[in-house]
Image 1 (spheres, rainbow, N blue to C red):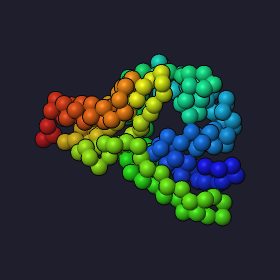
Image 2 (image 1 turned 60 degrees about the horizontal axis):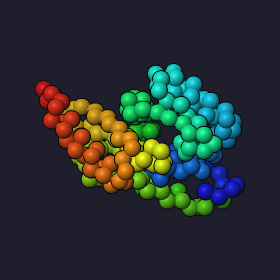
Image 3 (image 1 turned 30 degrees about the vertical axis):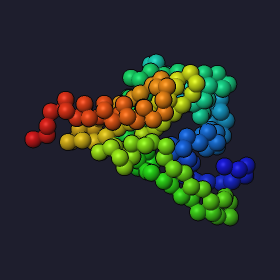
Image 4 (image 1 turned 180 degrees about the vertical axis):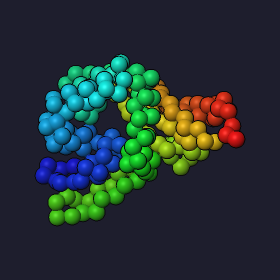
Length: 182
């Protein structure tokens, strides 16, 4: 994004979720904090209210500056499950590409989801990719299979593509373990 552009909250959420747009995260923080520090405080209060006891946010974008935050796979799986209960977030997380036409207040934007499971792995509804040098390649993923919602998290992968391969194998394994619907 460029300074001065004005986008809807919905479009900013697409920018955050699909390509991990730090600029969109900061734009949301400026408005809804207002400001990064207040926004991060709200994020941490919300995390506590959701029962995410082992999560601490340090920035609106999840990057390790100004200070590193932290979380666990269990907390991220809880967060993924809660996020998928919101119809708008479920739609955004499963969208492969989102296009915003040029207007008087912003240029055209096109964002592609970085989740390589979408469209390739049965029942996948996406969720969120991530990377930092401390956390490695990460992936929160979910799928609906045979009437069951399966949610998983991979943290600390050293290979970007291997996280998707591992997630596919985990989903297949979990599908085999789940009792069939009557």
